Length: 422
Image 1 (spheres, one colour):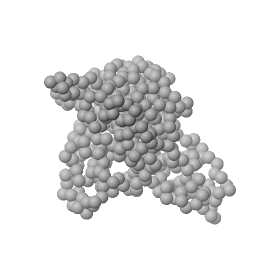
Image 2: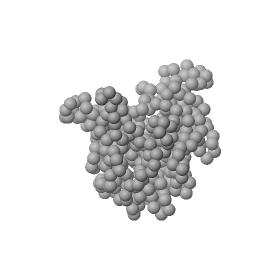
Image 3: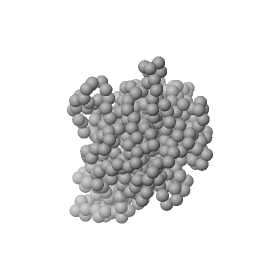
Image 4: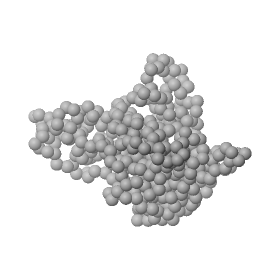
């Protein structure tokens, strides 16, 4: 997320299936409504190949009717979208863990004046993926080696397989908190800065907050954070009839060692905005420190399972080989479980929620295990990922291995991930 990187669905297709064009026969000998139902049960990861079958299948597999049928009959595919680096030069991919299938997506529109986009945020809303902000280098700025924050916003529609350029954010930002408000068509962003992945520290910080209206394609300012904050995560909490927007972790002010080396001052607290009328505009309140001084320097990677318990989400953190759970009542982190297979470094892990389960992803070669080492020898030329999956309610672990289609090993310090249900 980024983010915690978590996905949200702010809008969903109508629960009533759209009319099917009777002039196009989907399966000869069957009524179109029956044929449509049969085809809708095919996993989404295989749709790309099926579209080449005939014109009627291509049109149906790109229609709103398909998504409506899949939602009504609860046959959605829960997919992981991975952006290995700048999506204008490296294709993002969808991964279906149920079928161990990968599906590449088209490149994002390229701007010839900018390069090296990173620290952007991706989030799903219905059948669409949004790529917001980030940090990059601009050939029109000086000096050329100084990264700049980006205000650009793009949307990829998985029904039409096309990219659209959206209204830019009011303030350019990267490494910011972001969440989609369920059933409202609104996206909130908060904080951020200009830091680039090539630089360990420094860069700007900001406190501004904005709300994006998907239908109107416009950004509106909201009350800013109480202080500068970047590298943070955002999520929503239902509090009675109201909802709250939480911003947690990250780094604020910086200091220097010997007056030369910049060092981050990490945030040990969270801030909360009450959403008036469900869309924002409330004041911020501060939540105290989540741990004592010296107990932990900074938050690890955070993910959120939405509406886990009567509107309160489950907030989890990956800290080394330990998974911690946040208790909102006590404002403390508690041990939840430990990874069955450890890696040499926490930076080698990707951490994401998919269909209510925690997925910890790492290159196979990074996992310390006799079994995985043996498998690595068999797949030494493949970009193989080892995924450890934890079910919070059952308290159980399982794992799977998949060969990623990327031409290089994933760097989970810079790769951006989000999830989508189709």
